[in-house]
Image (cartoon, rainbow over the protein chains, first blue to last red):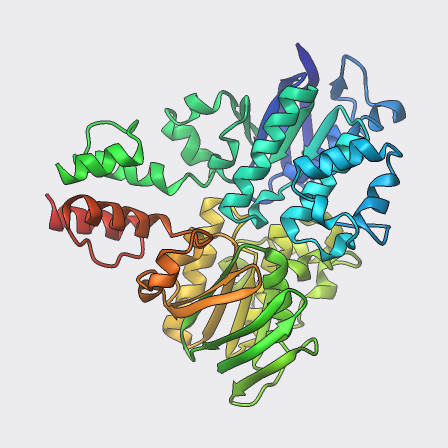
Length: 252
Length: 247
């Protein structure tokens, strides 16, 4: 079911065309990766969906964005600001349900930090705290702007796993921006924009579309780069091997 | 510039000791960007920390330049012009593929990548001996990242600069660094030549240490068929080694 609809969005910024006739739809309760080359409008697009930049070309649930709609949307960015002395106090600003807060803190492995200052947390823990705030706030749409690039790989996988869990369990619609294709691993779809929409589809099919990947300037996993080059040099016959299978092929 | 950190402690950084070699590229990997930002504050002498940091030759803000994600976050007010040095050579705008018209724009209308490029222009213009780059490469698209990496390599190769690049992604920095410092949960586990570090027993056996992808493949091939592919920086070199040793 179409939940967020962007129709014929064109933006010119300082004489440069940022978006030209951009249209796409996002279903309710889906996890979507949104990408553009560097400095080509990822943050702008999230700010449009968030309602920070007024725009008539976007509909949420078939309606233009109102102040009421805005309360259902949370934008998580790399910049963090907290207003309380402890993690618990920070969360009680949003909800008085201590049991629920503790349940989330346990699920996010933050329960041991409940009485610490939010600023004492490491970066991934801070971003987990931001996600808990969005969940306590009962945000229906969670927008995440370029936070994964500051995670190490283990943390990134853990965080994206949490997003997937809450997309499914709580029916959240989650849109995140990235320049790395591997971040979209659990996404229902990936939307690639460079002025216009280059691709809007499943993550599996994008790997079969070399031209779009090159045009999008996305960082592809080294695993895929290795597979493609080994195939080019006839060391392997297809690019769909796992890494273990590739090593088997190399060592044959 | 050579920099020697001895038992540096600040916030979660716990007695961190390592050396930065002169005229080399040193990568610092950490599993927390906050530790890298704090370490940078220590290295550029911006905060008082426990422990000592020796600089050879002596520390001067004119010798050490920094571009960090924390700097780009602080760029909020004024125009781009306010953040740029006077008399910038036009070729630096071309090198970083920035339209010179950008100087009249409000700084808060720029993306993080554009802000980082503005800082990079200043760094190149000021001709520091040592340049510290933190958390800038990660969010770039592949074309921009390759371009910046090429500039970093050339700064060492042709201008004899000492470069420090810190990152939470080992694969991004592994291809172009000489030495590596591994910081996990605020502790320095090791600092060494990037190839030697992953042969150290304590590092190999530590489940918290993430190996670079290239090293993983080299080890898998060795464990399966006892073939040593040698030390490779990039996928292209790895492919050449595979072809040479196996095919």
